[in-house]
Image 1 (cartoon, rainbow, N blue to C red):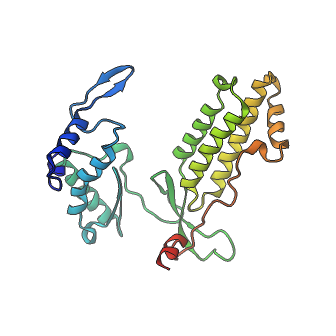
Image 2 (cartoon, helix red, strand yellow):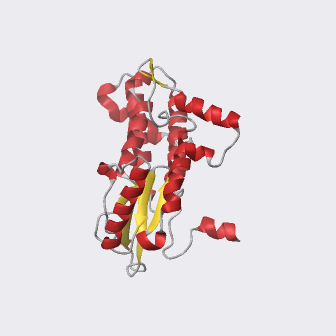
Image 3 (cartoon, rainbow, N blue to C red):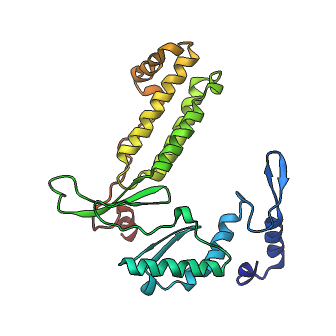
Length: 264
């Protein structure tokens, strides 16, 4: 509340924020009230997170400790040397301690961004420095990005839920509509970078799961390939959208097309 009061003086707004902070959450059918922080999933939680961590942004010195990039509570710091990275980690830990916070040990590490080395995950993408794999680009080194393993597994889990046995009584059109909505949203987020291969895998997984759902619905459980053939023989794969051509690949050492278009 002290952070909010630095910029807001309207007492009605401050009273509303206090009420939202005191609101509990439903957990297993019972109301649970936390003693600190904002309710998990609360509509105002992301906004208050940014307001609170803005102090971190103000205190950070990019020239000394590297470039800090923060999205809500996810943070990366880009440094030139390992020594600078270690100093940045110590500085970050100290600043967070002043806010009553600490980095999550399981997700906090120093990564050397180099060809042949491991990359890092940030905001659902896996980032890795790679060398061009075609004769024309073999001399180029650039930062590639594609959906992380965790994000890809989450997509598979969602598709599995939408084609579960519990939905065998529903119409095929309903299942396809749900799959289309999910695939369109998932591809809309991950269509940047080098994501074509992963997007194709996720879409193929949706085709297989839809075929298995059709086999169960048609009482052909032992011949699950029957349902997949039904999907593949359909002229438009039963209306399931294709994700081909949706990826916007990066151009090494050049701005993204979207940025260039906005400047023009």
